[in-house]
Length: 205
Length: 434
Ligand SMILES: Cc1cc2nc3c(=O)[nH]c(=O)nc-3n(C[C@H](O)[C@H](O)[C@H](O)COP(=O)(O)O)c2cc1C
Ligand code: SF4
Ligand code: FES
Image (cartoon, rainbow over all chains, first blue to last red; front, top):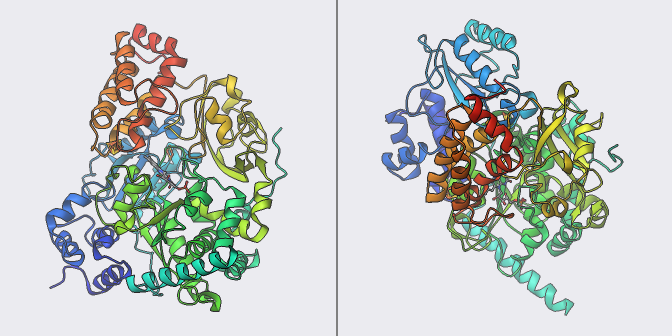
């Protein structure tokens, strides 16, 4: 029995097929697992291990290296506040403190209602709109405490359900097929082109 | 005044609301560079890029043409595009993937043709949810348009592009760590030599890794010719470059300017660019090239924005970022925060990097938050010297990758330039800026 819902399982299998080696699909598959469960559950990890031909321990060991993967449940909305250099210079630390008060949870923790997890992040590459805030990895561009509070109120009311999906960074990233170059095709193209090049080089000399 | 008469090579389309769509791309000359490419021999395409003397835009500034030509003898298997952009205060690739994904995709196809590879990967930072959507959409559209897939535009060249998401790890920007991420592993940089993935890259096969901005320049270079690109800029630094300006300036943002023809003063103060310091305060220092770079003081404002020009003064253009500190900014806090970043992001393989970053961070925290002693300055410098012996520029490397060697830059700069600020912290027992 697949732990992934049928539609997700299909997307997962398509992803694996894109890569010359199935293990290469590890990161995208972990994003998918998180999309369904909100975090990397035991069953999700096992499913990814099966799909990539690895073991659960290997998957967990890999996932724990990457900040975006959660090995414990998190809130519906993961709020990331950057305090790195550009945001620091724009009051990022104070902003993080404010966010913690508004959300009612410490940095790294989840609010009691399970709605928000607050994270202090490194640079999110949106430094001209500092301090930078992401909610579920969508830039929300609330650079003042007031606009942040309004956003949080709106999130509570469900105003952003459409534009800020609850989990899963790849939820709207859909590949619509296309050629997958097999290893043989790659070798063939290499062989033909180097033969042709050699011939041209000969002709030039 | 800044010299702004050069064409905007990679950012011209961005002003359109729908700059990321295929329709807009085609309306503004999109995929013409690729059509021209397909009428040329692969070597001729590579020769144009060589003639353009396009320097890699990912940080190290290695000439793209030279990287490709190292491979001419052994054919390349894979092209991997680095869109992991995580160097603090760098946000120009973010701009390119969101605002002009087709330009990137076209650039990748052109490079793949020059290298004759059938498979390319675009590795996009996982936190770029919208960027991932846009690049995947552009790839989908390119297939539908016949610009990707089997027999591109009815030529006999075929190419597949896979858009690969990262998952939050600065170190995966380092090209060998990026390849590990693409192989589904932890992002541990590989031991050198081999120095280039060109020798053993993805799955142990020859691989070219290039940055998003490097790729995005290719459609223009092929359409207009390498010589037209090389005619812009001065000396080794040709063409234009995207600069991400942030910190204490009135108009932070991404600006494309001609290389060398402009100075740091131009980009920070010109009203059409940075517009000057926030609240018209005095500039204290600026960090060129990302937080891995040594800092500059106001005396360097008239330095030209060129790779060799900045290198000769002991820093680098690096990732194209410029961060401005003004008189109200605390240099101790800035250097502490940068060290905290390195300490968090160290992959942990090398002792000097793993232990050194945490140790320096703790000492810097102490100094910034009022618990420091004057001796801590010597301690911090000694620790820095252990990571990059001699504390020269470019730094000596004791670690597998240059993340380690980058740790000393900010603290060393801060102590050299602002020792009085450190002493004020020690004497007051708190940060004077609090
Ligand atoms: C710690 C570290 C982080 C890096 N991060 C990036 C990055 O985010 N994007 C990038 O293009 N290059 C990054 N690089 C540089 C790459 O290793 C590589 O030089 C570059 O992608 C090559 O592309 P280019 O020649 O087109 O510049 C990083 C290097 C190091 C050591
Ligand atoms: S220098 Fe630091 S980040 Fe680079 S390989 Fe060593 S421990 Fe990892
Ligand atoms: S420093 Fe905060 S987004 Fe870049």
